Image 1 (cartoon, rainbow, N blue to C red):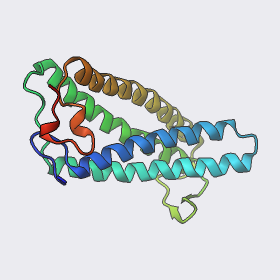
Image 2: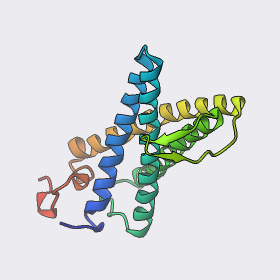
Image 3: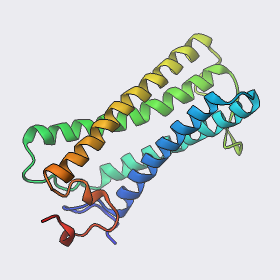
Length: 188
């Protein structure tokens, strides 16, 4: 098992962080959506604590992922990939990182501005970023929601590009992010 990134494939740590982030974002979104549908304010509150705790966990994972990414060279993009696609891949990946930073920070800011204490999974108190401020809370909530829509757009582009490379270009762009990929597994 290759722990660090190589020229042809992402390493185990990069793959693990990628898929943990993807699963975590989907779970956090589902938890938020479910909480909106609950009729009991107590249940809604508990689900939102879980949502916010997941968001803070994803923020920590993202910071770890960025540190790992900056300390490990990225695998080479396929030689057949046009220059504009290489540039698009770099821009879209960094845009994803930016929005994955934006969403939990605006969520944390909104909660802080609400003046209500937050405990991470009800285990320990999360420090406030700001004092209670109703206007700031509303702005941060709006930015948080806009971040979700930007994330949906970038995620859709990311998945579409990966599928295009796999099924149309028949290169290793998608396969090298799967666990168990070996250079000998290349498509014919």
